[in-house]
Amino acid sequence: MSTIISKLKPGVSVRTHLLTAALLWTAVGLMLMVRGALWFDKTFWWLAIIAIAVGTGKSFGMLDRAAKKNIGRILGLADGTCIGGVYSWKMWGMVGLMVVLGRLLRTSSLPRVVIGFVYVAIGWGLCFSSRLIWRVWRR
Image 1: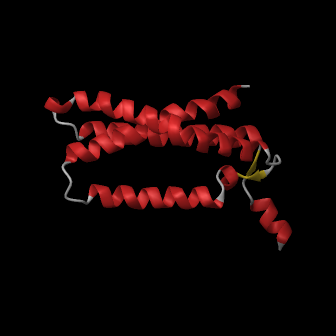
Image 2 (image 1 turned 90 degrees about the vertical axis):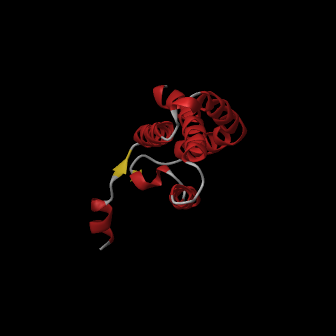
């Protein structure tokens, strides 16, 4: 039974894990930024600039640390580790929590411009912090 499971396991190289992590951070960040920007009224375009500044702060203050921790964990993996191992169980739990919180935010009674601000700030923070993973992947 274990040989069947090991044959079906989508095992990949460490380099592929790094690429996957970088792509996920970048893709989710871009998706959030586009979605958030669509909620800005034309009179609130300047909020996007402030959101990017806030996202940069979030990147330096929090997300860079998470990216570095994730890079270190990935570099410690053996080639052939399952692609799902791109994140730890704790990080996958955080991803799930963020999805739920995003859904709650979208269905809240907050003005769309406020939700857009949060989305752009978080999206930019993810994109900006993904630079660390891309750097290691390119080596």
